[in-house]
Image (tube, rainbow, N blue to C red; front, side):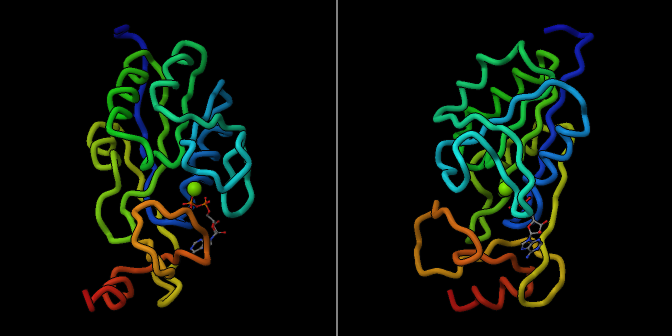
Length: 183
Ligand code: ADP
Ligand code: MG
């Protein structure tokens, strides 16, 4: 490990439609540094070689099956971005630490909670080891207040169900609790 290198881990998290991807892209574009962005193969919503925000801002991204595939690029870029990080396994924590220890600025975006309101995959552990954690919010479709939860509107209890506005809506705590109070 080189003591003079300044690697860090930044986590951007929140519910669906909260601008996580938008913020990831904004930080990368503002930096003027070399970068490479990854997304899990699970996220098939957009074109394979891009990530795209709901407001249609795009950046090139490489689709990977296993988070280890990132390590090949360890010494080639100033910034490594990872979107939809909740879909990777816990191995992502060590990988992000290794990259940051090598001097890379690692920016990770992902859902902090699943549709049931439980912590999602490796996100809690990533938040624990990160230097910076930013929680972004959407607008609650029921109340117009800040939304902190992703509510699934369709009848399906698979943990991973890719979807957009037809399957999910962003809700405030009060609106989320009201809809989930029957179970
Ligand atoms: P995320 O990656 O967190 O899902 P994106 O960066 O892809 O979010 O998209 C954020 C954009 O989604 C906002 O700029 C806004 O235009 C749009 N959007 C759609 N529904 C909502 C909502 N309920 N609250 C906030 N933004 C919303
Ligand atoms: Mg996104």
